[in-house]
Length: 101
Image 1 (tube, rainbow, N blue to C red):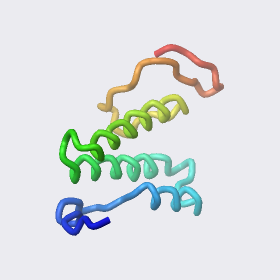
Image 2: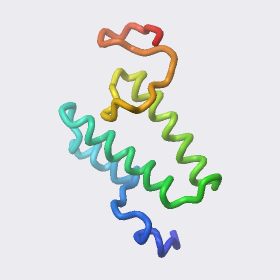
Image 3: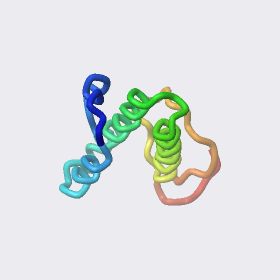
Image 4: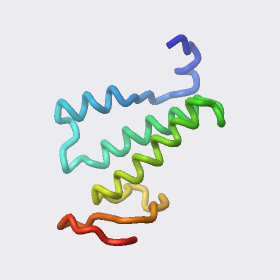
């Protein structure tokens, strides 16, 4: 990718390809769902750390993170970080019924 300074800025690399591999090989089980969340959030954090604010990469990274947050809640998961703002809108309860938040 021709980004020789990447590892000077990003000390703990993670990418969505690695996350997908870990999903496919069963590394994340239901009892490790927050490890999955941690790895995905690390991708977003690294994107924000490396790419200048307002750049295409930073903007797209933020958009994907916002979509991840929405889907996380829609699927009924809770954020590991309780201080994270929850998106408004429909939410599934354990039985799969939709309710407003």
